[in-house]
Image (cartoon, rainbow, N blue to C red; front, top):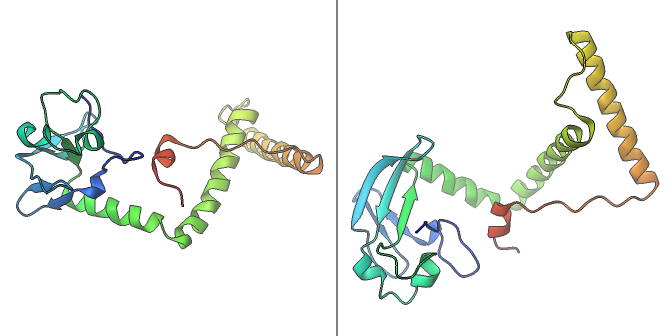
Length: 177
């Protein structure tokens, strides 16, 4: 069955596993060590390290339901896919930084910009240029931006509530504070 790489309500995530890069081993939260470590390529062609725990040690584990998803009678132990060491360490540092208040404040600006771009694309056809030539295209973009501003001003003046923001699948997996 598939691998569970993210943390759900009670499950283990990659961050719960200890990675020993020098000895090419991964240790689970219960102390079991991987029996298999190999360098491979993902379906997209990116370099990955795949580690697999022995089924004989995973099957009797009391935390098996929190560790793997799918059929509990599967014939494999937990598998975990990691990026190469340098990339994995950068990813872990970035995830740790995401939990800081400074990062959240800085990201709030980006969310506003992305919301504006999304509105322009969905509601105002920003990706389609109706005219050929740089001058006409520039004029269309300026008029589209003006229309967006008027639309937002109208919503503000009439107290039209903004739609609730969709929560991405990734954000839904992270615990709330």
